[in-house]
Amino acid sequence: MKALRILTLMVLTLFLGNANGQTITDYDGNNYPVITIGSQKWMGRNLRVTHFNDGSAINNAGFNNWYYFPLSEPRYCEPVIPPNTTDTIALGFWYNYPAAGDPRNICPQGWHVATDADWYQLVHQLDPTSDTSSLTNLESSIVGGMLKDTITWTTPNLGATNSTGFSVLAVSQISGSIVWPSGYVCCQGMNASFWCGGIPWTLGVNCYDRYLNYMNASIARNTDNYSNGKSIRCVCDTLSVTSIEKNDFHSQLTIHPNPASDRITVTTINKSLGRIIIKNYLGVIIYNSQTNESTKTIDVSYLANGTYFIVLPDLNTSSKILIIK
Image (cartoon, rainbow, N blue to C red):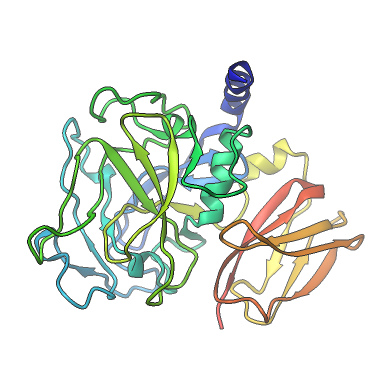
């Protein structure tokens, strides 16, 4: 098993790295490197924007006033700088889930907050031997090490290689309040936590995250209180050109309208779609169909608001669709 994982890591290095030096710019003008992992394009640093993509300002609550009411309003603050870190810009900001799950979109145009399904795909891409089907707390015992920065974490930072260029810094999170109304950060330099988006914010909704720690090379999936502050990584809405070329898939995939409310049309050029699968943010299959045509219209009126994952196994490709009603 260990030999298989090492071989897998060697092969995956061919699919990783900065996409030809490409960068993405947020509403405030901050630039981020773009990291390609399999068919996904990720923002290579933590988000640091103060506006939604439509220009609406996000409330800067500040660390000392983080838990002032109303807690359900979108908010951010600058993180507490962890030990061994000098690049404060790369730390990004902490955001609560109402900011991460706001339909106005906190990410640049054409990008979205990485969803539960996006993280699921990333983990399984990097560690195909992992058991992510049940989406339990521990997703992989090695992927965290492939994502962690090798310099800024507290010793021993076990398993850290940053072989993906994902460069996760140990920025920790706002995880509770000891003396209201200020936030509280435990174990600076020892952990990192990212919100999973894709679910519009409403009171009572389950808010998922991904968690990495300095004492192991694992990555874990948890639920947490919406009012806490975590980092955010954005993912491109469309496939990377590099991954399309590697898959020898030269037909252009389009899904429209996107966002959608009632129906979507999936189209390719010079290729039949084959099997079409739609998964929700938990990775659960909610639609499964087969066609020999290059165009398929699908009724999505029964789907709840949120981000969904469309998979075309026969073409070895996938994309995202946002349902808003």
